[in-house]
Image (tube, rainbow, N blue to C red; front, side, top):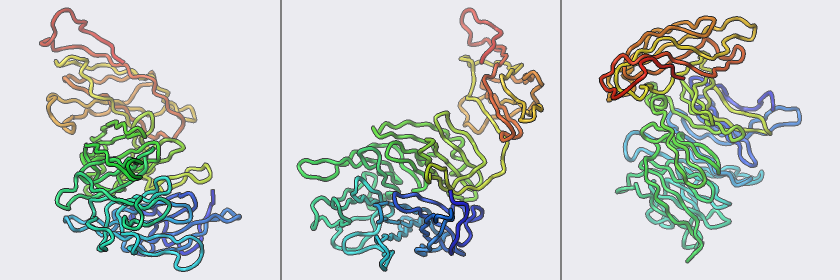
Length: 450
């Protein structure tokens, strides 16, 4: 990787300017969206033989504070940029769309609309065909297309006029009622194009008979609140729905609800109103779900909080790249799922034993603490759990936690996960059923659970 950036680059640090800067790697260009004073600018980067990044300032995209997100569709040396601002009213969406003309001849950047293409909130490349969503236009060539529509260009060109190219076309999304629906994102997934909006999601499916076009497959379910809330590649997407639940969907359009609402809602409901960004690192199959104060990483093992808050991630020549903000929160924390031992009565938790390596890189005992969440009303919301004070684990890996409740969650934390390796193999819980109102038949009054 290059170790320096030169050029008219403004201030390229993540801090009070969250969620900027952002990097996007296309097949041909490395693009950065970064601040210059109060404005957001588009830069093209290239790496010299001296291992230095050079940044060319390509376009002023407007006042950064008003911009919700940007979207990029890459077609080799040609790309499309959509810049979206979303207010609070039904007619408060502002869109600026730009295209990069190939080569070095001027103009390098042209702003849409043109007679061949409208502006859009989002755009993607589907096997060389341009797909737009959230259309903004006032040209008779494009009929009644609006923010609740998707459109596709002719095959092999960037012309959306159906009267000129019969392979061009458009469709209205099912959640666009009386012209109020939005399309936040169009993105290729396998042999389809996923369409995500404020009222739902659907898929564009290519068909060849009776003519070459796209069919609409309605998928139901909740939509997304922003184009920032979905990321992925042609194999998998991850998105946050409008209820703050996390989802995965694969190329076969198989949806998997992961949930994690209790964590994601802390980001989406942040009183500071910092945007939440979902980014994807395909080489590691990791999704980063980050706000300006907290961030999580989703991989095949599940969801975990992290101290690196990513505005964007990617890979350049096999190396992980991106822009990160260090939250400086290095404490590691683990909370179990809710435990009731398949009995609704009161149970008492005593000793906790942990199979844990809690020595640091200098063979000193690492500080590890245990606690428990508990609640008495199973119908209450998740945030009604109460928490015991934390107790330090002894050198043998055990601690006494005394709590009686029908529902319990075990909690473990440590001071700094960066300091040496950390392995937690099991948690063994000594429990006693102190309330036998619901017991029918024989029951072992003392149990050990792992």
